[in-house]
Length: 227
Ligand SMILES: C[S@@+](CC[C@H](N)C(=O)[O-])C[C@H]1O[C@@H](n2cnc3c(N)ncnc32)[C@H](O)[C@@H]1O
Image 1: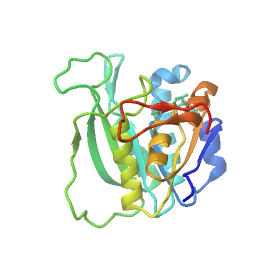
Image 2: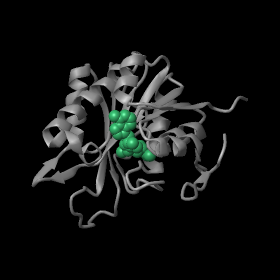
Image 3: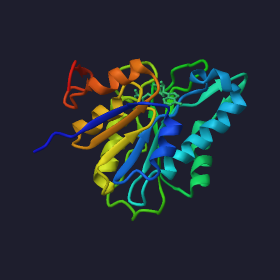
Image 4: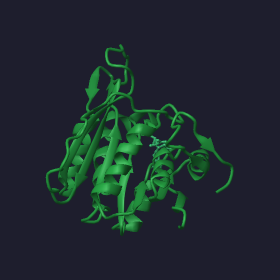
């Protein structure tokens, strides 16, 4: 059986998404950059950039696919920024409907934090509602799992998202337009899905092309030099 494919583009994601249009046979799983990664925009500029970027990611998803976002809230200049609400605003722009909303604990419940929430939202959207699931779901993931970098998506959260793509859609490619270290791509491949990543950082692209994750031992990433 052919091994799942992985392609990583060193590119600016917005321009890349606009150039691609509809992502045939694909779903999107991503984590949009925080305001701290786009300091030139200021808080208000970043907020509208974020909503438009979420809408663009969703516009690329075909009818049979889903768009899944992993985002953690921040406190900035005395204001709580609810990124789940911002992604939902993007969904309204793109005509998408919310399929699920999970909470992923980034730190143990009760941990005191400053500036960045101890939880992340895992939000799944599609253009059309899906039939009610035959079995229940865990709405709170107690541990996001191993992260190859500080702002990476935890492996457990990636598994949750990529399993949803594999089990609940007919799409067999996962696109992460802000792929960072490549956690989503590595987990998608480990679950038998093809993966396409985009990042404007050379360093991130290098990691995203090589990161391997063993789902049996998710705390021990196998970073291989060449694929
Ligand atoms: C929150 S991190 C993604 C982490 C990733 N989900 C992981 O688990 O490794 C956001 C990434 O977006 C990239 N980025 C930010 N703005 C970008 C842009 N305009 N185009 C492409 N990549 C961008 C950053 O380099 C960073 O790696």
